[in-house]
Image (cartoon, rainbow, N blue to C red; front, side, top):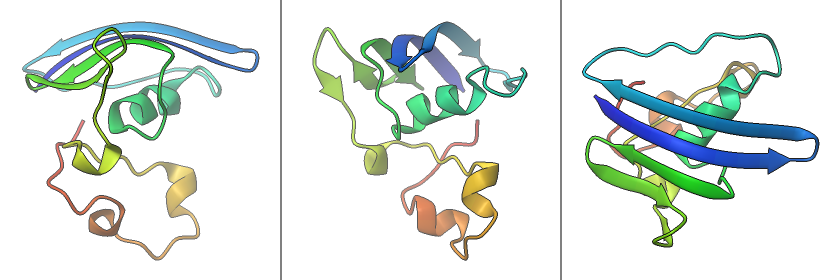
Length: 104
């Protein structure tokens, strides 16, 4: 996996500015509740759009504010199932993103 991410997002009083570079390894996100872990996953999966920056996964540009690229979430090779999404849902992982997925 190759992930390059440099984005900025502001939602109310929450500011997120993150830069990630993951090459040929697994990645884990750790932090306190409200630190932005789920937000980072949502940015990669396309369920949340940043105000600026870029996201590239395995050589494909998922988001680039300068070039005006916003790959629709259903076309992204990513799926994310968050704890709150699973608690009362009967959907399977395949139901949430029927396209091929890349585990993060």
